[in-house]
Image (cartoon, rainbow, N blue to C red; front, side, top):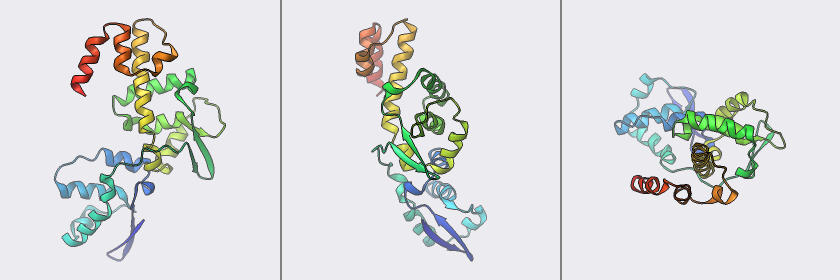
Length: 218
């Protein structure tokens, strides 16, 4: 953390994704980008602790705030996509599922709910999805993940949470396949689960036009 002395008070400013909580990351993701300085101000308010007053920020001179902007430059660099399947929070080890094939029916049903609720933006429901996929090592899924979602929001760091992005993309593709399979009353084979989405669309019929549409919009 960067330590800042402002008007006789000490503030701490995150200096990397490993010091940004999942809750802060979600706020950063939803910052409305307007003018450059307004955007930097909103980011600063999210990343600094304790909370800082707008009037106090308005009193900063340009040079001082320029230094703060440089300290926050990491927000323009995406967190690593390397997945560490274990994380320790409050001295408890949490582990991610080994693979998509390890997902139970109950987990899948809950994942479907939150993926639908996310409305195409996984970040909207990130803590709820993580609460299903990442549990205390050895714990079986019991559907009671609300408290864990809150724990992850405040204690899981952004670099760890966002390392799952590639996993989520795979999960979303699998979710689309399952939805289409349900529509045509067809059970997916293991081979179909692993094939590219456009190839799967072509295989199930009426997929050629859909796959062409996907290519045009990608």
